Image (tube, rainbow, N blue to C red; front, side, top):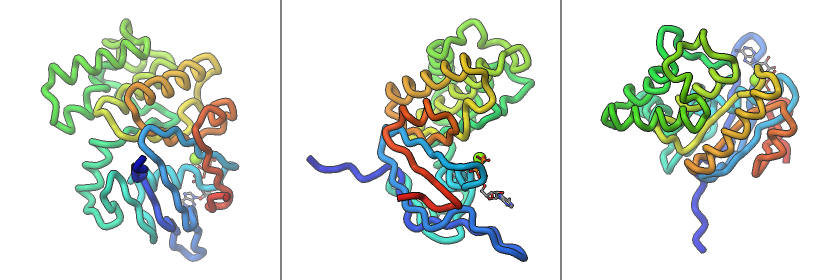
Length: 227
Ligand SMILES: Nc1ncnc2c1ncn2[C@@H]1O[C@H](COP(=O)(O)OP(=O)(O)OP(=O)(O)O)[C@@H](O)[C@H]1O
Ligand SMILES: [Mg+2]
């Protein structure tokens, strides 16, 4: 059987903050994530998990090293190409949902689709409604964020992250701000959706029960991935 190349691969990815005292956030990181794979990123507070995730998600640029995503060298890509890749091929979920307060849940989910502009509106809307329904939010989709609970808002953020059918979903402590019941629902939905959408997951989490469900764990200490 021919082995598929990884969806995402880094070579000696390094991010240093220059200042009076330079700080290295991520040191020489070699990471490979395959299509549909669930990878948990764990480590102590301040070890560089978010920094690594932002590099993998093209939200930050490395000081040195390379990052290949879907066959493209992102280190030499233009800012426009990086932004396009983020929008079309990646989805993001953070600890706080960052929904826009003036829009309904459904409208929030539709925004990245309209920004991408590749799918006719009605088709995208049908997908948004389907995602929200699968996430148990059929009754809530016309509500605005202030009318939703924390867990419901986070599920809207997951639907928004998935609307453009990303190849990879990146999340930074997506359940960090939720009570255990909402957290469990969100975790279960992440896995289900990733499986049905064949979407790779890279998730930073402090939650051992969540990382235990991952295919693989990346453990980072002081900016260095542990062997
Ligand atoms: N802009 C910045 N300026 C200075 N130091 C920073 C900056 N961003 C991150 N750091 C430092 O870099 C290190 C790694 O930070 P990072 O946020 O990646 O850690 P983390 O593993 O996500 O931590 P946590 O679990 O608390 O979220 C920390 O020591 C942090 O204080
Ligand atoms: Mg962090």
